[in-house]
Image (cartoon, rainbow, N blue to C red):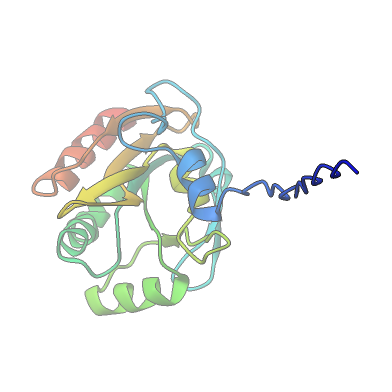
Length: 201
């Protein structure tokens, strides 16, 4: 009798679609220094936001309607460059008040960190905590993204997401009057003050 041909068994492997990690999604949506980060141009309306300061007080951009606002984004609390910048704005605060300009600092890290920073350096203006995180617990700052300052950085061959030191001067009409990119700290607060004075004229 002829032998029966051996039946070939075929096993179907289940195909599982890979879901992008929160880290990947955050990187795609937050932008980087060379592609997706979109800074707000001068003359454009400043995006609305709501954040808490070092004392737990809530601040909305709309609270400052009719007044100029200096919005300076800095990378982290209590680091060397950020401390110098924050203290420079502190020292010039009475002159900003005379120019009818509010000063607001924004960075990642929570209100508790902001409170320590403010207490240590005597910072007597609002430090706003843009401290949202993604599913992995990594920083995913909403306001920094809105203003286009959450970018890809590199250090010692490693890349990471962080705030690009940037300052916006928002006019009483809620529009961007001037923007400073990749800020160099020495002399910066004085330059912003001069711009605020001109805006007030």
